[in-house]
Length: 449
Image 1: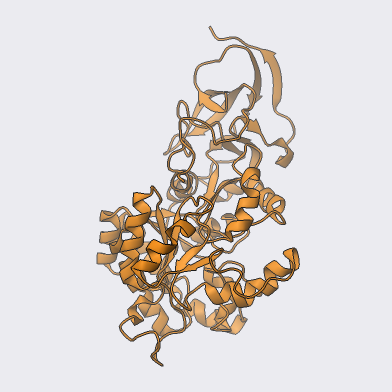
Image 2 (image 1 turned 120 degrees about the vertical axis):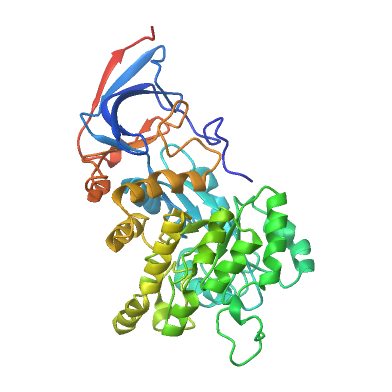
């Protein structure tokens, strides 16, 4: 299933009223320009529509498209959806991508997301991995007891197979399980490419590293099958070899920048990308999700066999002494980000484990690798457009969805202004219940000339 078409609002969504937005300074991709926009049937137009219009005086506020989260697993079930949605909308993050989830739980909340008053979300459902590969132990040994049983009751070990992960060892497995992979109509496919540099060692060898995933030879086959079905492919990676295998296999998106998870100097060096890696990623137009904060709260930093889900679902903070060591090796992540950015790789903002992508963007800001304009465009233009490539979002143009944030100050001059949200509109619907700055509406009858 592909994301909703740009020709109409997402299925099941109601349209807001008609509005005239005056006295706002609208982001045009480079700077802020004074303009008047109207919202009609949930879309932006410069032409005043016929009928009743409510005027919204934006009073000199700075208007930007809503933000995105290209990697997180916290939108997952009915027990936490309201809380998670409220957090995201409060931070101005309207679009969220979940690249591995329990299919059954996501299907329970499909009708509650992708609505004007909720977040918009896409789901991969069960990720594809090899025998014993990540994230099998995570679901069966950790999350089953610590995360899911407290909210849904006792779960037998093995229940998550074919719901949260699917094991693929051969091409025959891929063919036999394809209908299972596409059950629940996933928005995209997730593959795990983990320490692929160890494949020549053999999976049973004593020197083999503990984490595994798909055999690299299977990834091009999965990509071809997914693309034939109209589904894009996102790849979990940990090392530079994983990155290379995934890019050359034709995946559309890399879920992490290598260097996000390091436990030793050897890990750091295995994660280091080269100029050629960046060049090939640019040539193949592969998107890469930053996840710079993902490793910082990993319980696995202290316990090698207790990995969080791509950094998600971290149950406890990392050991502080171990974290200090990790940060001393962590320059490889910053180096890789710098390399990819300057090479022109299409970077997206995703936190993996944080409450929202606000934590990720502020962490990226602290690196001083990106100027404020680049960060803003990455968060409000590139990331939403990548999550919903067929929708008219991420810019202010005729016919685009009437979704925006009104900021107190100019984030290109002071990036902290991304946290100073005064008003939110989503597909022509005001989310005033999240605002603290008071009403800005005046009703009047207005007709087009």
